[in-house]
Image (cartoon, rainbow, N blue to C red; front, side, top):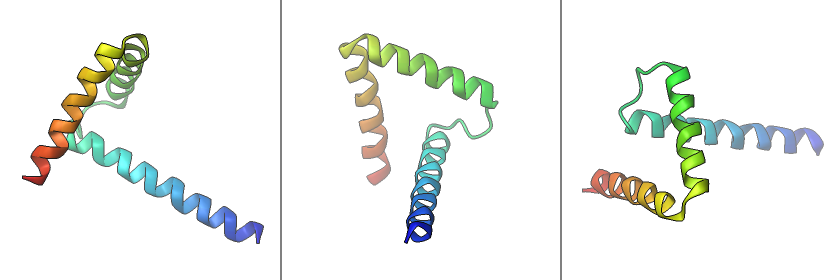
Length: 71
């Protein structure tokens, strides 16, 4: 039973990582250095936590990008 749970957890973790990698590609950042990507994510996370206005602005950008994909 524990082994089956571990396998399910690993599959879930792998799926999440693939989805997150897809966001990097969608943002047009596939060929950027990992240090730059991490710095951008850390900075964006700090900005989003510091300001509700900034969080909403960033979410709007992402929402538009997903909507543009569907069109």
